[in-house]
Amino acid sequence: KKIKLKVPATVANLVCGFDILGMAVHEPYDEMEITISKGPEITIQHEDPFGLPEKASENVAGIVLMKIKEHFQLTHGFEVIIRKHIKPGSGLGSSAASAAGAAFGANALLGNILSREEMIHFAMFGEELASGVRHADNIAPCIYGGITLVKSTHPIDIIPLNAPDLFVIAVHPQVEVKTSDSRQILKKNISMKSAVEQWGNIAGLVAGIQKNDFALIGRSLNDVIVEPVRSILIPKFDEVKMKSLQIGALGGGISGSGPSVFMLAAEKETAKKIAQMMKSVYDEIEVESFVYVSKIN
Ligand code: HSE
Image (cartoon, rainbow, N blue to C red; front, side, top):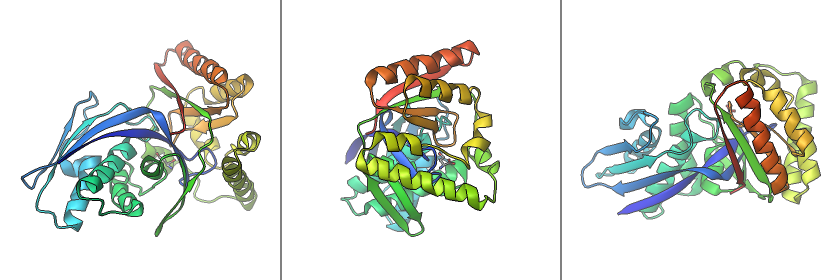
């Protein structure tokens, strides 16, 4: 038995929703093929240039399949072929795609024995291997599609939200920002004043998403806690954000833990102009960048 999957990139946090909001986009996406093997081994083969580990216990998809195999005491293994197009370390949910794809594919091959929450439970082992943290804000939209709210990971409680008809423009400048490092630098304590402001933004954003109220989405895409600390790791972040807003973006910020930066726009023309501007900002400082114009998936 074999399954072929297209697994979408995801933008986590959605600015103010640190660790709780995320959305799936149409592009980029990974391709995965998972086969139930005759022998007990889990084998991983990467047909991409990124040099990711292929030993099952060190591979994000491999560890998820190991946990599923162990839990159900399966006697057979899995063969996995991954063609990764979501660049590792981009902040576009590359590890989540492999982890969620493994859980989703295994579930289908095993006759749909897992609920979506259980798939997320297993996929979080992959995120833990990749960054040391069991967060689900990339995995949940990868499995559910659209925009999801991770109300809690313990117990797993996911709320699928409305997916407004918006363009998502993302730029991935080729600088290294490790999720573990960009979590390390976050403040451990926040003031009540900042917390209240952030609650207002998150509540406004969720309300805006549910009501398709683009103006409300725009004025809620503000992060007073994480972005001010993390954005210093991303060259030209302030310039890209300011120019995007001038062109007509509703708003945006860091994608996941960076270094990608994303913006939302209502019109295709605006999205194209933002994409061009993003590319030229990084060309100017001779940093290679990849730009994606996509929609919420
Ligand atoms: N919510 C996580 C973070 C996403 O911002 O650290 C990492 O991909």
